[in-house]
Amino acid sequence: MATQIDVLAALQELDQGLSRKEQLLQDLRQHVTAIGSEMAKTEQEAEAQSQKLQELEAQHRESEGRLKLEEDKIKEKRVRLNRIRNEREMLAAQREIELMREEKGKLEEGTLLLLEQMEQENEGLSQSRTRLNELQVQHRQEVERTDSQITGLEAESRRQREERTGLIGALDPTLQSRYERIFAKCGGLAVVQIQQGACQGCHMRLPPQLCNQIQSSQLQQSEKIYYCPHCTRIIYWPQAAGEEHQA
Ligand SMILES: [Zn+2]
Image (cartoon, rainbow, N blue to C red; front, side):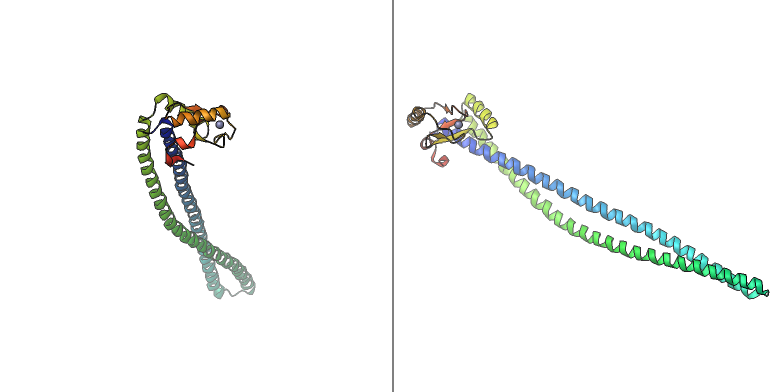
């Protein structure tokens, strides 16, 4: 027949396991959220690169258009040049063509530069897209793995909470609420053993008389509960608790 202290020790073990799982679940859920934001960031980067590339393409089209216009102008001028008979007019026209050629040269340079920028941007974009694809595969696997871990932990927690309900049924309600208060207040450690005359919760020495009292009380299977005079935790003599709870 399990005494109240056995039930308490078993309850604490369950509660400690449950809070560890709760912490783990929280970490895993945060991990999934972090994966999502990293993906979103990479997608934004690729989107920005794609936009930049589109702008450059538009600039390039415009530049090519201007170049074409300049070439047409030069052609036109050359045709007219053939009809000029006056030497002064001829020189002026030639000078004009010269200036147009200079302008055309500048435009060609500009167009070429844009083409180079486009190539660079295109390369960056294709790298981003490759990275994004890799990340998507990695992240899908990671999310699946984490999800299955979460599902497993949740199922285990549910099972342990049912087990907990069973234990609570065997516990005095006043003692239960006292235990829960101490558990919450004392960092998830409410039921502790006495070892070498000291409380294993606060490690303070206990009066030898109290230790003897607890020991004999437990040997007689008494249900009396003792508390550490220093930290108020529930203390017990290890031999008296169920064997599975011995340190
Ligand atoms: Zn103590």
